[in-house]
Image: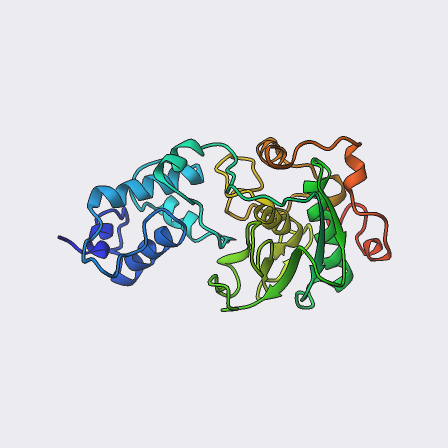
Length: 296
């Protein structure tokens, strides 16, 4: 039977013949994000050509691009886009069929509605500490203003810990420098890292600018994981795995419909007015102009 890289080579639509390294990277990408099972070290069984094509079609379907089953240019470009580190597919093939074009739940939730958060480390000089804290507070408020959840910053023990770290940092999801993977978060549950969120310290973190990586947009996405949502294939969802750029003024941001339905399925709807969940006025927030440094 052909090896995996030889099979995948037959899937590539390009005038330039792919190298074994290029093809191996494609297999690694599909495996890393849940579209291919991890290799079995106790078995020499290889992937079939149809199995590899099916995994590429699943990736294309989830990404919202044409389902060619081929590693065409659009598919390769999508694989190279900055994104979240967590897999897109978690669970069985039945779950994969049921989760298309809608939010996905991982089955774990916080058993309490009042959560605390703490910033352990900060990004480099691209954002001040005050701006970083304010943006993290607003990113959590995006989820809190639509649900029964509330979030309070603390300097002590916290349910949600946020840090900017680089490279391999001991959790099995190493960062890869500028671009590539931007952040990841751990689902609710039992254990020392449940709910934790890590951002790649090597990114140039910005706020509401065309250049750099928008911290607020990435933080809203990662906190969705911290609260129990998996990746979504819905076109406008903030829980799509790929970086989508700035989403505008944090104080005016509202969750897209798919994400709203998902988080309310977990924690219910907020009874009071939506504005009640926004971060209270505090000195750190004055560093953010009302309309951001650029137009919305």
